[in-house]
Length: 90
Image (cartoon, rainbow, N blue to C red; front, top):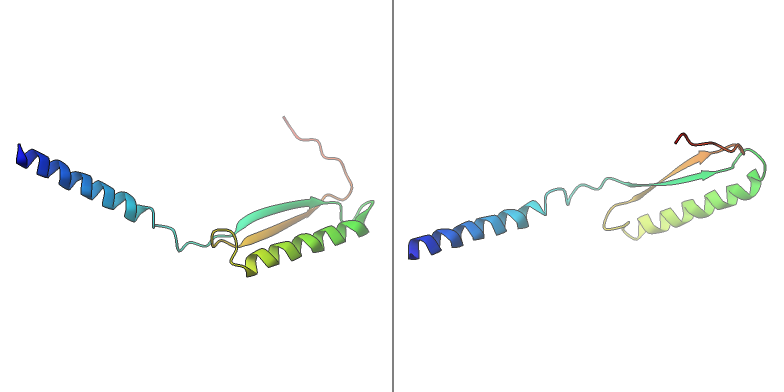
C-alpha cells in the first residue's frame, strides 16, 4: 500500500513540475502584438486622419516605452483605405 502511495505521489510531483516548467517556455519570446488602424489618409478627410494616425503612434510608443503589454511591444499597422467603401465577402 505504501509503495502505491509513494508511486502516486512521485507521479503527481513530476506532473506538477512539468506543468510549472512548461508554463515558462516561451516567456522570453517577445513577438509584437499587431494593432491595426484602417484610416482614410489620402481620400476625403485625409488631413484629420493624419492627426488620428499620429495620436495612435504616440499611444503605441508610450505603451512600448512603459514595457508594452505583458512585456510584449505593440506594432501599429496602418492601412490607407483611400476613402473607398470596401465590401467584405461573406
